Image (cartoon, rainbow over all chains, first blue to last red):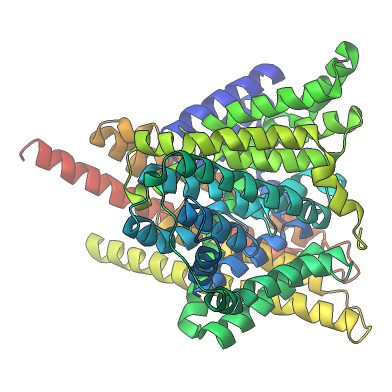
Length: 436
Length: 176
């Protein structure tokens, strides 16, 4: 039998090796913990593996995941993304880097209906890129914005990442409050990201010229096309905020409304709904299979034991709470470069959340920081899934894309530390909620 | 004879995976309507009902289980293939088509085997949910080994395809 600490290290090492040989993340997590668990605890570990699927997934906290995914998949069957980008383009046409700013704002709009960054990128990217190329915008700046704008997807509710964080953290981070907490940071981030192209294109207008003059009647008529987004956003968040529905119920009602809007407003028919249905269940299965593997991995690594040791250690050393948070953020930024977000969340939330509670900080605020950090992980190579998504879809070299991403990434890190410095940005709005 | 059996097996796992993912999709759409029904009953008719949450949790678990073999069949797992894309194609192919599937197969066989034990234990003690509805949990749990069993078959099918493909590429490379 192996020492528990050694077993945890071995488990992490085997998982990282399998993960980086390109094997599915779910198998890397499950197989490594199964082998190390068997060597350490014997057949008891295999018995536990048998229980893991039920114990990890038979939890109502995960119900919003398929519901919000369904909303995203139905919206993908409509032209809402095109309409949003079109409206943003008309309203922002006079500013430097207008089309890049429009794509960021379009992503912010889509983020109000989608819960994933990849979906946010794919809903606006294919619509915006032809326009950006037509006006000879610099590809690096344009695609850098598109890559980093994806972060808005999970930050502005609804949010798949928030569901996972809340699901792992449990009662200390209620999903409804976490979703509401993402609104102000999401809006702030959209503005901060938009400042980057405006600044760059003001200094060098040839990189992104203004798109030309647009009449007020065109601007106002474009607003008619964005009502489905407003309706979905208010149906989901309004019902949570005013205590009419729980986050789960809001997901169901939001999906129902989106379904009606897609059928009545955008002419989506059985074929489109069937595709949305299959895509939803497939995306969900991909995520949940990772959750099963990560649940067992977390058990074998002994996250709860590590959490207790960490809390004891911090109480002895007694560092300043903000220093603890900053250290955690830096650690997460580094981990995010090498391990995918889902795995990081499953392993580290059970370790860090008790620590945050023990030093008297707001778990909701920490959850928002965690969310932003996990989204930054999606754009930082070598494990930046969104980075490679944009690279592959829009055929740009890694070097060029990295150059394009860099100024936005710097802004994202500044944004993360603004959230660290000003907790009310995340905690003020949830404190006003009627439905607690 | 062997080819006929192999073809039949291939056709079975394909069809079964397709039917199951469609069922999973239907359950997901049903969740939308059940949740909306729960909200309407509670807020418009003042008649809260106890089963919508529980039913959605069951459907969510089932939808995942029903879809997982299709995810494997079409090789749609989430993976981190950043480093491996710089490896020689032969090594990449070997890891992807053979090693990945052997590890996956062993993992899923254990999930099936132990999942079966868990479901049988649930039947033996007539396990019920602690919710107001108090539904029996055996029907919920029995789908776990069944769907992981199908997943194991799909991985086995993909492993056979992977070995055949790897061998044919090696033979072409060696000029046989």
